[in-house]
Length: 173
Image 1 (cartoon, helix red, strand yellow):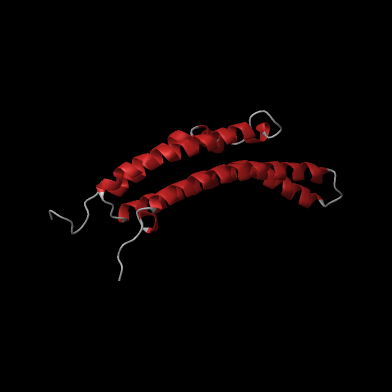
Image 2: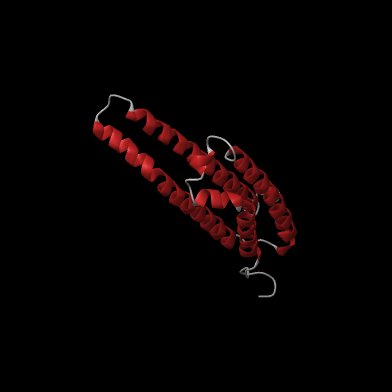
């Protein structure tokens, strides 16, 4: 049996793919939630002029009113769950310290990607009709304004969990 594997097919490489997946997912979720709020708000305005029952209008208004706080909380919850899963998987993977330099390079690359996505988010919701809707949220704009710093912290914690543990059964034990 051939035991030689490529670095990118190993469990250790999942760190790189997991972190980039989290970065992209958090960005897409932020944009999707704000666009969803725009759609719900427009639907709420449209139902005021529609000949539909009052209960339906009240239901759409209730959804519109609770949308912002609900999705702000769910956004933070999703991020915490994703980071917890990443950190747990990093803790259980045995990685050789030689690969630490690759981790540092990956954190730099992920910081650049985070910076690009943060800038795209700012430009999307800066000075247009979406700006008032984005301003209704608290957690999502704060998170996207500090996206680079948050992802650097996540990357560093992940790197520490990946490399700063005693492996079982190694040399010197």
